[in-house]
Image (cartoon, rainbow, N blue to C red; front, top):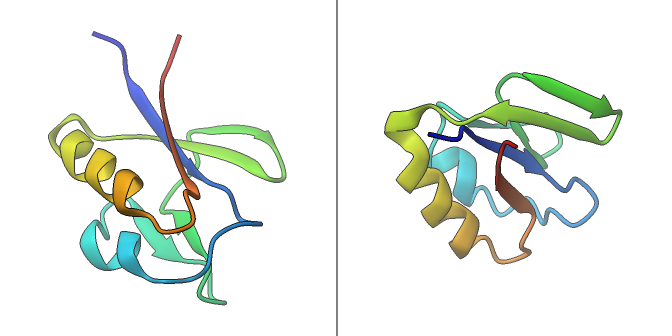
Length: 79
């Protein structure tokens, strides 16, 4: 089974707080209202930092990504 990973598009995040209010195990406030993931498992560059989604939280993370008003939550399956 492929692992899911998640990241935030910082430039488009509107700081609505939806993600870190609903799934604080995965999302946090960077300190300026903009969302981030709670840890970085993969760092591609300064703006592209992924966290592996815990298996028991996959459906919650997918739901929050679908509901994100700015579409800033990116969820992908790892190759």
